[in-house]
Amino acid sequence: MAAKENENGVKGFQFRKHVERTRWESFYTAIYNPSTKEFLGRTGKSWGQLLLFYSIFYIILAALFAICMQGLLATLDDREPKWKLERSLIGTNPGLGFRPISNKTEEGSLIWYNHKNDTSKHKWVQLIDEFLTPYMQEQNGKNFEICDFNKPANASKVCVVNLKDFLDCSRSKFYGYNSTSPCIFLKLNKIFGWEPKYFTNSTSEMREYSTEFADAVDAEPGSYIWISCQGEKPVDRENVVGFNYFPKQGFASYYFPYTNTQNYLSPLVAVQIVNPTPNLIVSIECRAWAKNIIYQGGDLQREGSVHFEILLD
Image: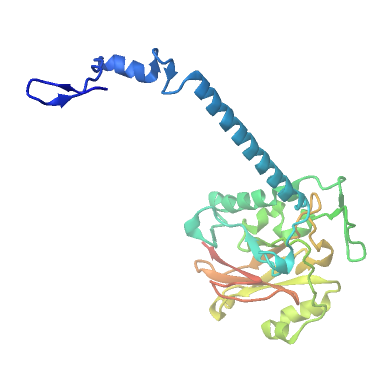
């Protein structure tokens, strides 16, 4: 464009005068420009090309994701974990848990009740009812069968857990919470494929732990993961009369190994704490015994055992 010299000798260039628009006209033109037929700065053809590109891009991305996911799922089994026992994060040492546990976090592992107060005892009865709900379902038919040491369940069946065997710790007795001898229920964590190595006779460690417990192991035929409970410290042992175990003092061998068979129910041991001293917190430790269950007490690194407290008003 040729420069034009003004009367002062200053050269300038000619430009098109800026079109003056109102704010609304400027906003409208930014959305749609009728002179160039552009919408948001792009023509219809440009928008079509952009839409086509991203459609193809995301279709390819989704296809790659589906292929990778299918490859991952092909390596997994619906019934059996890929990593088991020593190769798994769970490991080979099952934890021991107990019920009932209060829903109030601040109460921790304390079982505090008054057997003469309906509200107090029904709280714990209801918690146990909720825990035992799967066991209260009909266990006849399906793939359930009654097992014993001579007749373990086959690969496609599971053993019945009969709640009637809990006697003084049964629902009809309010799990002991209508008396001064309440019950708790013990359960081992499930580890796929784990097989216990049983003590068929008492050991020196058992006899050192409790002569009564060692005698019970020697007197009971069959293979069990044995369970023993006692006051955690000498002062606690002085404030509880004893313990009763139902149906037996251990988990029977025919419930193991766990292989994720449909309807499988973990075996339970009900422990009745006999007449703990009222108005005093009594700390209890229960321990599982098998050759391949590692035991460690303490509050931080507890293994193969469980701790709880009883406070009877």
